[in-house]
Image (tube, rainbow, N blue to C red; front, top):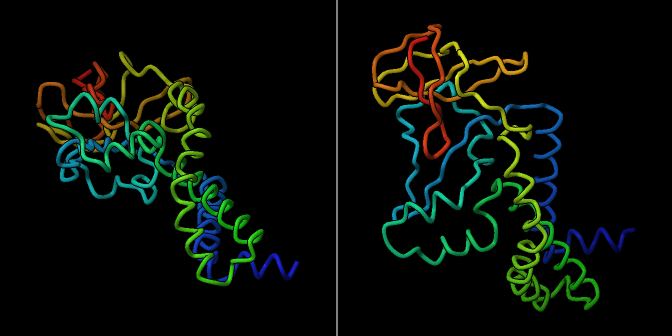
Length: 235
């Protein structure tokens, strides 16, 4: 047991071991706390890697701690909106499934596979405490990415049929909602809508740009093309 501990926390493997432990704690905390990860940030990694959503239009109190970490980057938003050839790092993100799946989901798989390869290889070769071990860890980055791609690809169909909270997607169109913040023009805000008896929070924007006030009842007309928010009008 002590030998295993020495391998896991050797100078060669300690960085990946600690990072993996942090990720495990992160997922345990997420599951136990039940924090609502309810902001779909559409990271449009086109030429300038801009965000489709205008952060100035989101009220500060609406941005949750884990929203960015769990943002799902959609391949359609990358390919369909590009104005010239993708950069190399954008192609890498797409190819290895950091695009099309929740980022933290793919990232966790990658770190785990990279850690497993490094630990096993350095343990077998006895290089967990010398310079050769560091070389093995660096070399393992690439095969870990390829294995991550293979392992995570089947999950694409699974996540495609779920909404951002992991539930079966709900059709909000035509439903009434109550605004939780005032909106006008291009400003985004929150609205609460009842779906199957459960209150759900969604991001909304005024359909015609007119002012809609806090606690006002609105009707959900359509979803934005990038699926980040819904367009609403007075009920």
